[in-house]
Length: 252
Image (cartoon, rainbow, N blue to C red; front, top):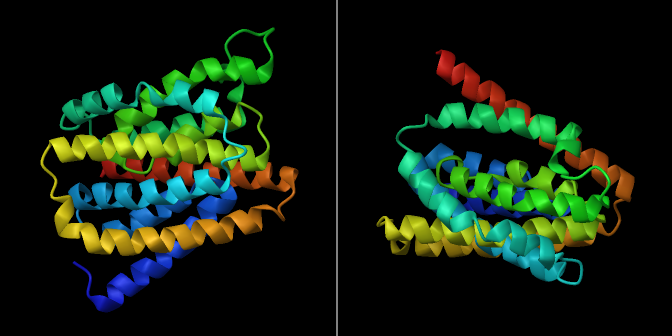
């Protein structure tokens, strides 16, 4: 457990990482999880991270509520719970580092070659890309219980919709609400003691809401083309980090 100074540092990190997610739509969750893993074992860090991210994404979805594509969110959300249950069952059989490496490779391909997410060559791009969202929900649900931060896995499915920056941010956040809620429900069923970490989780959640508000304001001043380039660069960096770390650990 961190001391008082450690909790203060984590609170500052929660604000900063939520600003990143408010502008980019992702990356902040992975950065926060990395910080939590410095003090906690994964079995504690992942559910605590889930609580903070549920609140953080809820605030972003609220701030961008006028732009959220709920038709896409519902398509993504319905497979999350059953896929997450399967993920818990397979957790002991599938090495986490192998999953990280696979997700990293997938994200790289899907970020720079998103066409394969679109089924039907002659359909309109937005309508077409929505057909891939249930598969995205199944993948995210399956890996959320073992990997924790799956924003880079979700993002290519939403980016393939070709939305505006506010709609992209809001839709990713709304999808993440259901992802984190289903993950927390599964951890609760398996006996995780959320009450033990309630106060620090609430403090970090409040900090994340502040960061979301700041990030939302900054997004209004970011050109759409710069937004698209920045998201893909951040996605690629995170994907490479996942793939290299996973493969390195497996080879060790």
